[in-house]
Length: 365
Image 1 (tube, rainbow, N blue to C red):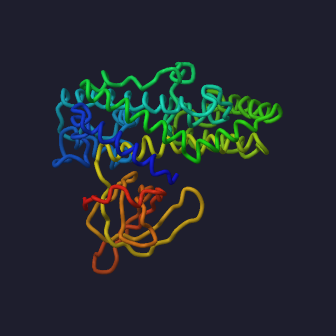
Image 2: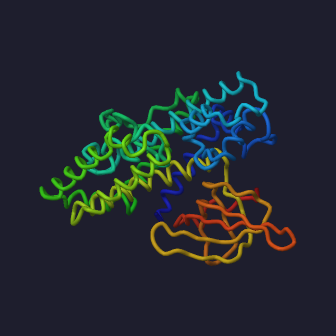
Image 3: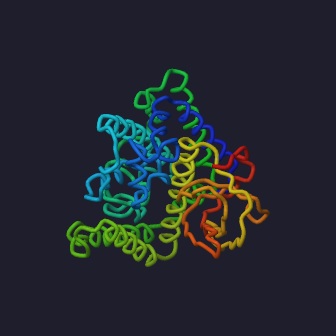
């Protein structure tokens, strides 16, 4: 994922979204953006985040997890907040998320071969299609049958309460982002893999989907785990990986290519886009120590950070080191206290290739 046009398009689209009053009102109540994060709507969200809810990392797709945590008897109502303000924020969050998910669905409709995508990952019940909890950016029910490929732009202007000029900007930046995705190595790889599917490969993909449908049927899931959401999510992941690992030849190539193409949308157009639109430029961590780099795709960096910034999973950060010139997206943190009560953080982060020249106006915090 090293296409300069892609990051340019993501940045331009984020600039349009963060200029919208509706988005600004939604974002202002998030704990990272609030000057007072221990009461009111930010305080309630902060308590959920401290209890494991993914609030900071995926700000444009958090309503499901907020609803789930709101129903838990875990003391989230102990924070002083106004119910009317909470309901108003929840309405804003729903509108922003619905517009974002529609935009993502429209971008996906530009994939090679859409809507005829025989990917096992799109079988009902997988981590990419479930209506239950998933860490992934799920494809919505009936999305493939919605005719999005026939829409020239995503129709989200009214939902976002955008003015005429803003509606034009939303359309223009969406088209530019779609064009950048279509020109990416990942989507071209999917087109090549699709063109190489012969009858045997298509049959193998259909058989994998049939097995997945059976293994992920509601009764099968309930037999494995009837209620715990994380155990059900992990089971979906394991079953899907097993069926894809069993594929060979062009069928496996297609499944892998689809995963990379879809992950590109998820990472660039949702994860990174969401951080830029809701929180602004990446945070500058400055000098870090003990950098370890993992091989593979995506590349993962591990490093020790002793500064005063509180890191959040999903946060975009930049460090001062020749080994890692690109922006990184935090994926994990651990904390330790050394002799003399000096605290340090060991951070893990996904390196975003091709971003070295982007967002270098970042400030600490």
